[in-house]
Length: 210
Image (cartoon, rainbow, N blue to C red; front, top):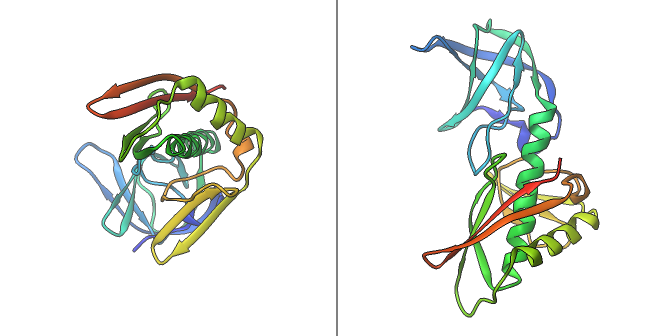
């Protein structure tokens, strides 16, 4: 089992033990570490990028209880320095945290967030309703979400076994394994680009000002 330090730490660098490195048919190398800071693709979030020693980490995935780092070259077994790209991590964390704020805003109108896709350029939150939801517009969601950004709400994290919940300030927490900012102030301005109804669902598309 790979120890997933990204669940409890915002660190981007550490020394790790390389347990295995195997060449794939396409000439890449799959590396397994005893512990990692790299977030794998999943939960609506892209994987981290960075380096393990001299190798570039091209993508990261989770297969059962192991985190697989796909690299561009062979990585020797033993201790290696790992470094997560700060630029990619920051963008992914900002987008994911913005998605949580949008989800909370939707709930205030009687909508329930059922799916989030927090990829750059295509971020969206999908809502369904149970009973008598109120109409929500992009303007209202944007205004309320950015009010939470301006408030600088601190991140709250709780762990219950393998389950982790993330919240901000006194807002409701969501079960989530993704990466998040330490304060909503780090998100920056949220822009709602489109709100679309589709088969009883509401799709809210969003982006961040650079």
